[in-house]
Image (cartoon, rainbow, N blue to C red; front, side, top):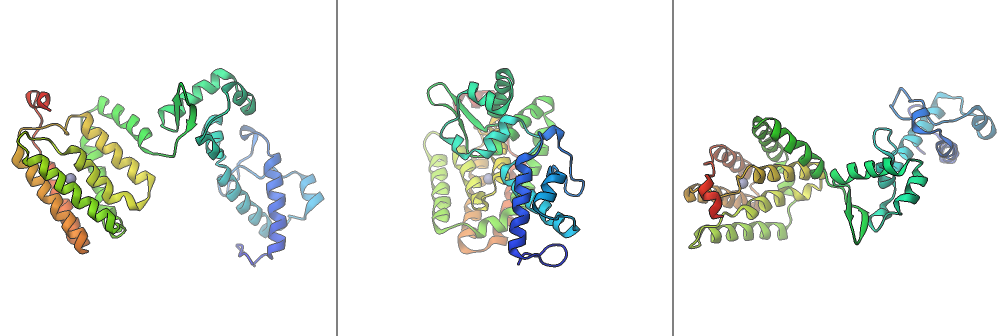
Length: 307
Ligand SMILES: [Zn+2]
C-alpha cells in the first residue's frame, strides 16, 4: 500500500494511475503551453477529458493528488524544467551523452531549435562546465560540478568589487565550520592517512633550503576534509573559494615563513584531532586557524616573482 494524503490507495490502482499520468506527460504540450499546477509549481499533467474518460475515473481529489505526485517524480526524473534551455534538458535526460553527443545538425532537428540557437545554448553549457567541447573527441557531457558556475559569477563579483572577496571567504568559513562535524566523522582510515601525508609534505616544503609555499597541500587538505559529504554544492563552493584565493595571489609567498609554519601547526593539530576522534576540538582549531588567516601577510610583487 502507498499512503496518499487521505486513505491509502491500493498498489494496482496506483499503478494504473501512474500509467495514466505518464501517458498524459508523454502527450503534454510544449513547456511554454503547459499550465502550471499552482499547488506544486509543476507543469500540469496535460490530461484531457478523453484521457480521463477512456482510461480511469480520476475525479476524486485523492486520485488527482496521486497522479500529481507520480508526475512530479516522473518530471523530476526527466529533469524537465522550463527554466533551462532545450540543450540542458537534453543533457540532463541523456547520461549516455558523457560518451558522446549526436551531431549538432541532428540534435537541432531533434530539439526543434535552429543550429544557431543550439550553438548559443551549447556555449552557455560549456561556460557552466556542463560539457567538454574538444576538437578531436567532440562534445561530451561532464559529471556535474557546481564550481564552474560559481567561479564565473565569483570572478565577475571580484572584478566589480574587492569587498566580495571577504564576503565569499566568510561564506566559506561558515560552510567549513557548519559541516565540520558531519564531514570529519565520515572520513576513512585512508583519508586520515592522506591528511597526515599532506601535513608532512607541507612541512618538508617549508623546511627546504628554498622555501616553497605548500599551497597545493593547503587546498587539498581542506577539500579532503569535506569530500565525504559527497555534496557537489559544498564541494563546488569550496573549490571556487580556492580558485578565488589563487586568483588574487594569496597562494604566493608573502615573505613570512614564520606565518606559514604557524598555519601548518594549526593544520597538524586539526588532523591530530580528527585522527583521535576529537571532532569538536578539531573544529575549535579550525576556527582559530581561520582567525589567523584573516591576518595573513599580503604578497609583494618581488616575492611573487620568486615563486
Ligand atoms: Zn587552512
